[in-house]
Amino acid sequence: GENVEQHPSTLSVQEGDSAVIKCTYSDSASNYFPWYKQELGKRPQLIIDIRSNVGEKKDQRIAVTLNKTAKHFSLHITETQPEDSAVYFCAASGGGTSYGKLTFGQGTILTVHP
Amino acid sequence: NAGVTQTPKFQVLKTGQSMTLQCAQDMNHEYMSWYRQDPGMGLRLIHYSVGAGITDQGEVPNGYNVSRSTTEDFPLRLLSAAPSQTSVYFCASSYSRGLGGVPTEAFFGQGTRLTVV
Image (cartoon, rainbow over all chains, first blue to last red; front, side, top):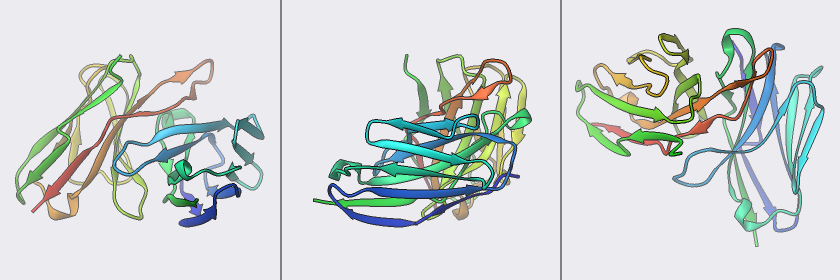
């Protein structure tokens, strides 16, 4: 089955700095790569996603890049703000019988210091 | 739309008791899943379903049963609770889009915090 590794496990930055979180996946059939943000005590919520036919996607201060050959994808947050502090999870999902089945990374605790 | 609704939000069980966590969605999504979240381990898939009457095991299925009799509901049953099942449980739903069925955003319920003593 799919295996997703996420690094780093914790990330501390100053307000205004950029933050980068990286994930690798093992199943070359995976074709959907979402990123979720989870605040303390809350449910995970999608912040951005990318599909395998796209190399990069941006949404304001957030961007995701995908390298299918190397089987890794990354989340980039620019101009970080204290409200970006949360746990971030990457995930991968494949086709065929794996539709709707997400494999998550272990999570990154992002702390943005004012 | 209420989205994905889970009940209860909190539950304490004694070892050996059984219970059912409820999950319902009103978005007509075909895919529904159950995850458990433990510190430092992300979310791990317990069981999932690609439609009414179809279920399959995920990464950590032991000790749990599911059924999907309708599109809307996907209950998770703990057969005989153990302390190792102390966790936060999330239900999620999603759908596929277009030819080839590319997955789309998974919507999560608010979670159930389960403690087994």
